[in-house]
Image (tube, rainbow over all chains, first blue to last red; front, side):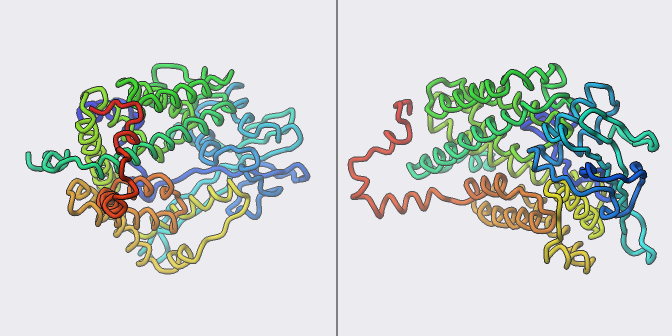
Length: 152
Length: 303
């Protein structure tokens, strides 16, 4: 137990297989996940347009199961990368494998936030879809119009 | 003192039924470990950058395992040492296995996600590793391992309940929090499959705030009661409640803890040794001449 405690205390609560199991411990917090859109056949000029509905995003959904990348890996990669140098961008591209040889993909930062409902009784929530990166076979572009809150 | 005596089974003889139960659980753990080692080993090969260093990754660059099939070599070594441990060929085998598996885990989960799915497997293998290094007598190994696993399972659930209390307070069980998580996990499903729809229970929970609150509160209470896993007589009951909680989590949030956590709870939480004993009694003639020790310890390493 002493070893357990010492390891988790000195490693932010995680030293596999030991953990303080903080899953869901902080309820009502803002969450960030990721979606991918295939915009190969889209000529939409409003690439970095923020929306509040997944249906109004450009292109069509690109399911990550096509590239055998786990959904949490993409979400955490964009959420926890504090900086974006060439290695990090290459790492992001590698999550899509050979699909990027022929497709244009838009990575979308999805943010859920709690807010008070009009009756003040319950919390309600806002979900925003913010384009994060645009990847083509020969280009990688990060959203220049939005300051993402990383370093979570 | 009485608590530790009953936890480590020193008040009861370690019957053949218990030895069978232990070895079956150990066999399943080894199979699970081999499965994870290889599936993660293959996955690691298409990673390229470390975003979140976990555990030993704080002190070494795990990206070396991302190339040249090094992660598969780790998986191969973990498989070999786990099998050597299972057959009690070397006493330190499981200790090497847990170290190798830690390296595989920190490489696989270097992308920002912190997964707890294999923690129960990890603490179980670690418990056997400590036991096999500490005791020469097989019965002592099994009693110690069993006691430690049971203690850690109970501790982890109850401590997780306290994490929620300290992290959020009593308002944690507010059903609105469940709504927020349901949306978060729906986004995950959408990301994975390109499509998603809420199930019947989820739609019901969105309609009735009190129902969402009740679900959270029930899960929280069950989690808090995790410590009763330490008491032999109560273990089957709390096991059933914990499995119910995991099924509830799956139905409401679609987080699948069922295939590893719930499966291990089923294996550990119920007195299967009674059933094994019953089968052995009933089919005594069939098993006549068949020595349990020959099957349980094919290399004859039982003391």
